[in-house]
Length: 399
Image 1 (cartoon, rainbow, N blue to C red):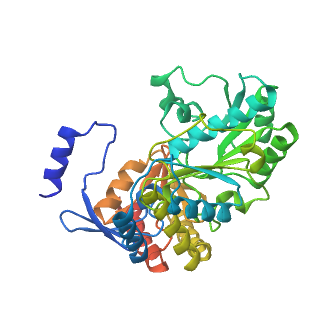
Image 2: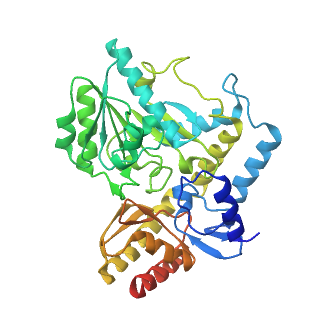
Image 3: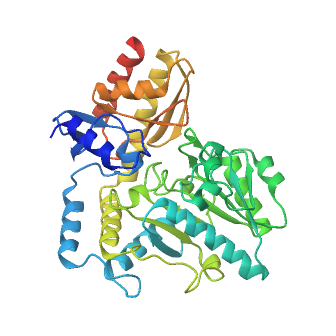
């Protein structure tokens, strides 16, 4: 069956919650994807920053195949070796103390919200606490995650959402301070806003928020779902700053394609937070997911992926800057590591540019309403950046 046949079948059966691109992807190799017609695409989206190791890594595949033959699921009523190993590795990489594995990023956010609320409840002996979130943020589409997502477009059809959420301006410390009250139990934000347009936290802002939280016994929750797992040249983006969160979330590249997420806590927070009966998951932390997580961390450490990201990210930055200098329709370039964005003028719809890139064999996605997002597999090389540059240069030059 060709691309068109698959798409026609999908539209008959799948709930139409995505406006999908007009291709059907069948297989991948290294940093390339192939559709059912055999067309080859250079991937600069990585499944929305998921496939950090690219496609077809033999060690990763072998680990999963071995675990399939042993055990897939037990429930969390029992221990299993793979998730214990995965917990040790993510703790080592993050410096956090306790971890709860989930099935997705949105579930990790839900758990982080509950953990913060329970911490405040244990500390104060009552409920009714508030949280501060950021305008322009995106934390997921479940009701709790939507409640802390600073975009009314996503929220309005599903209101009322969680009460007690106040929104401040990202990278504006005074705005955060203005929202603090005696009820505030946590500040939640992405270390780098992704869907909102690729905005890294400034050093002054994130370190100022961390100090404010420390002074007031307010928990700092950092969402590392998209920007974590080596994408910035550190294993987690907050490690580029002189801070440490009280709670952090991870997902996407944590499993490099196997659905898995996590929220992590410091010991101080864990001791006053969730206890048996407060939270749970049937699938979260099963042996298959644990094997994926462990394989990802082991491969990243052995292959020095973060060091590679630091080098190749500089090259990507320089080449995207070349595009910006050459094409007047690009009005801004921002980001960190291999999470970068080009903001286009309103006269040039980013959706049309990404479609034209797809026609030329380049997979790109957008962020916000006017940003082209560059979040390739972390294993890309200069030759791949050059190929991307050539395609984008032609599109922007000739339309």
